Image (cartoon, rainbow, N blue to C red):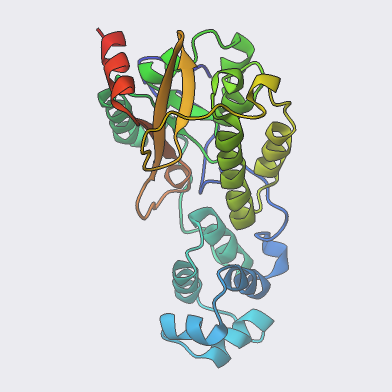
Length: 290
């Protein structure tokens, strides 16, 4: 899959729950039983049995019985507990399977006609954001679609990094990607790696862990090791300071996901937009757009 400057969404492996198409370390396998899995999610969320019981209109005794296997929860109880623990929908399906029930949430391929409205909406959104950069990624940062602003920043990046299934982390941190152009690479690299660490801790995805180990091992360009002092601009968030055609552009990023997704595929999508962080960047991008 290639990045498309028009912002047209491309078909890709089905993403899900910000752990799209990934394997896990076993915390969501049905052969562990629903009790240990629920206990794992409760402990991960740092919620006591009593607190969870109060949230779910149950009792601490009943929660304890479920976690130890002395009581089999109903399908409705599994979904209720998963909801109060903010379990991603893919893992909610795994909990249901472990309890002996059928999956509740569908996993629709992204190119299915039933998702036409979703794809069209994402296309319009990132195209409407031009000339500012915007892209759509799945849970392992595979780029589903991108607009002309992203294409501009990627000018000159080797084709092997942009095809056939470009990965946003590789594009950003690879020594032959955007890394040599990022003027505050140590800070931005640290931000991206910390973001991946948080997601790994939440989802325990083998694929995401493998990606993290790959990109964290990339050599940092010597010129960027110490970073470059930023101009005295009162940034309101950590900026991405990147060179394009001899000019330093500054952006702050924002990530949007779908509220209360009811489909595993939709749950894995995220739209990242880059907002100009100073007037000079705004003016330059408007000039480039003609």
